[in-house]
Amino acid sequence: MGRKSKLTEKQWQEIERRMLEGEAVRKLAKEFGVSEATIRARKSTQVEEIKSVANQIVATERAVMALPISAQITAHNLASKLRAISDNLASAAQYGAQTAHRLSALANSEVDKVDDVEPLKSIESLKGVAALTKLANDSASIALNLMAANKETIKELNTGEQPVGYGSVSPAQLKEVVESVQTKF
Image 1 (cartoon, one colour):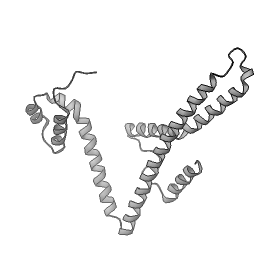
Image 2 (image 1 turned 90 degrees about the vertical axis):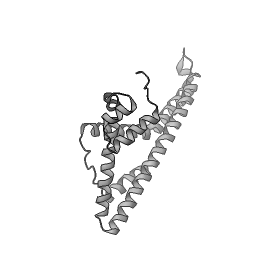
Image 3 (image 1 turned 90 degrees about the horizontal axis):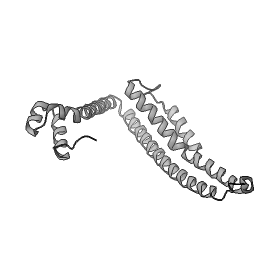
Image 4 (image 1 turned 45 degrees about the vertical axis):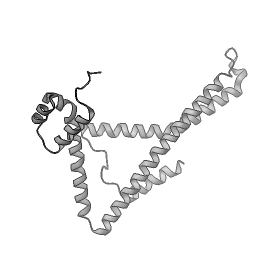
């Protein structure tokens, strides 16, 4: 861990805000009594990311405004559905992970019932451990799949490659995804 900053978090937020408004790093460094390198090291990546996201928002708003009104409504409705799907999948993943944790704990308590000397005499306990472990693994699958998908997305973003079909989800494809998720529940 590096040494503690001589600026407060509030001061760093002020610097970030002013950088986003276009103030020069040199001026801010002099005013706050830190080096330009210190400001750049701490804030420049985040500021650039914020600017990039802001530009994407503006581009998206312009693209939506270029659509006919009925298409704008459809685009907003689809975006709302996609957010709801994302939120619901995240909740399902969280509940699945919690369920997996609980089932793993139960399986672990069943292991204590197994006779270490002659484990086959404890066949019912072993069956219970196997069943609970399988249920725990199945419960964790949504969370693990979302984490794997997120890992791939982050990797693609970092390499600058766009995923196949990025930005071109048709209503039929969306319906297929929703139906496949619903059949798993």
